[in-house]
Length: 245
Image (cartoon, rainbow, N blue to C red; front, side, top):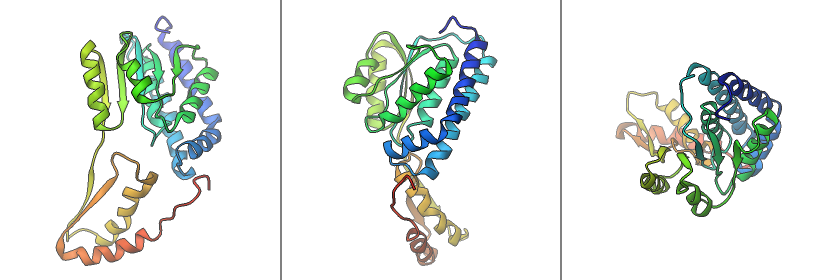
């Protein structure tokens, strides 16, 4: 794979984007069943994955002097099981690396769909491999494997610390995107009604499974009552339903 020209890798990644587009409806249905994501949330995630493939195809052309590091392990979270792994995988492939994708235990089917798309796009078998399993078993095996030279992980801070420690033992490259805790901060001079209407979606979208979800609300005391009145109305509009609807 590393011996292929930049142009060849570019064309294959662009073809992957085309296959993703053709299989858009299938990917959305798989995510709804696999992760419980609603159709309205799965659709833009497919678009993001397609954008990643196109971007890194072009990016690979721009950076013709990049040297592959070897085998890259991509470990994504379950809450965005299509776009986040697509970004890590496409970046590594564009640079001439081979990739192991160890999906979250809860969402292996979406990752397997990405593997099928890769084969249809012309990525040779063995260049991109999906290996489902428990992180404590499969993930650890590859984090510590001497032939895996870079880890790309998105998930909890606790697991990220463990992965970084494992990489340090062999001086491996590692990219970590770990947990966050965000807040809505509402001052008295803000548009309180607008802020209250937007606040529920900031934490309830994607069933609340988002590292940048605004899960705290800090309201200036003088407008607290006004905020809560609008906030309660906005919260009651949310429904828990079949994600395929």
